[in-house]
Picture 1: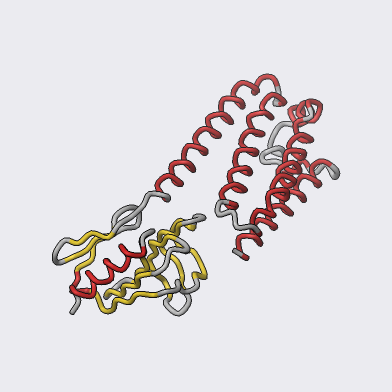
Picture 2: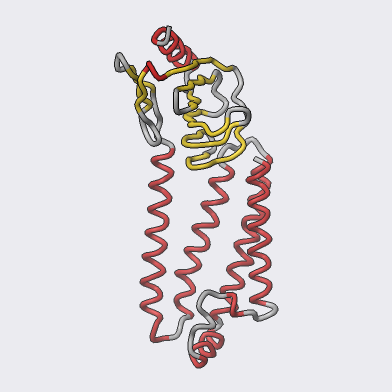
Length: 240
């Protein structure tokens, strides 16, 4: 959580700096492709107030993120998603709004592009979150077991080296490739004393099942402690 708060603070300061530099210092070259435009087009954009509004959008984004930052210090489980969602929607919405200050000849094209970009980005992120929040289960196939869903695989029981039921989840130190969501961790993470591991974890739902195979280290649990215990008994029986 400390890492996420640090990243959020960095983003707030970054938006504040860019907004201040554009609005107060008139460093318009910080705006993407502004310096690459013809001089007369740059002057028209300045006359329309385009760069100043870009800077104010940055400052407003920083202010909104700063207002939402205290959520990270509460028990609210979706604080990261709320802050990220605000930043994404506010910036993409602002990009669409700024199209009206483009030069007249490019205004319609800019509006179309920014609208499609906003719709595509929001759709992609919502799709990822939908897939990330899909539940998983452990299925028995006689000689093998499967963990379903994204990042899931099938393993032979013969490949299992060790199975253990843990009351506490070891510290997760880094995300390598996966979803670190408010109530769920799914994918490849670094775990203290275990190294690179595959996680299928409902947070704050003890106990946790640790499975070590010839090639993988896996942590998995169910929302139901009874079901997690049943998975442990199944794997223990299969590996006797």
